[in-house]
Image (cartoon, rainbow, N blue to C red; front, side, top):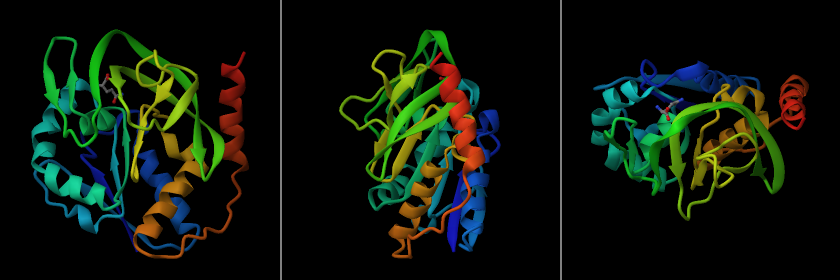
Length: 240
Ligand code: GLN
């Protein structure tokens, strides 16, 4: 049984980010892997050591402010689980909240968990549009497509990015880097939502979650023609 946790489903769920959970769970079920979902809101308990896949979605600045205090209370247990290999996907606002801070337009500093040594500052222009990045998955370069919409510009220092930007803005519109990969934590600005179209990435997350529990990581192949065609359309449009 894999346990999936959606943290703050009511606050961090922009642009259908919940679709990431649906994709993760459905690709497990299609392989006969039992999976269950736990939705955890502000003030509700969760034991991260017991979770196999944690999802944090995107949120507006206002929503990030509403959950920041609650998230900070969970820092130590989340950090420990991450160091022990918890598989995490954090999108946009969720990504920003794992970093040191988010400096908003009006000069307000929303504190992050500081689990990742990255910081975010709101820029003058929103970074909006379809985006394609190249991500290394099991040693192969894979094109991953999504949609980004953020004013935050994130700088990741020496951390490993999730991928490099082929078309679009990415972390800050300057360094051609997108997201962060740290241990089994995957951060990205890609909404879309990210996982339904990008099935190789979804399967990587499933395999990492299985490996952490010492379970069989061989995944029967699924027919991904539709998913690959959807990414192909975005790649083609953006390369014109
Ligand atoms: N509030 C953040 C920003 O605009 C995150 C937005 C999002 O999650 N899409 O940068």
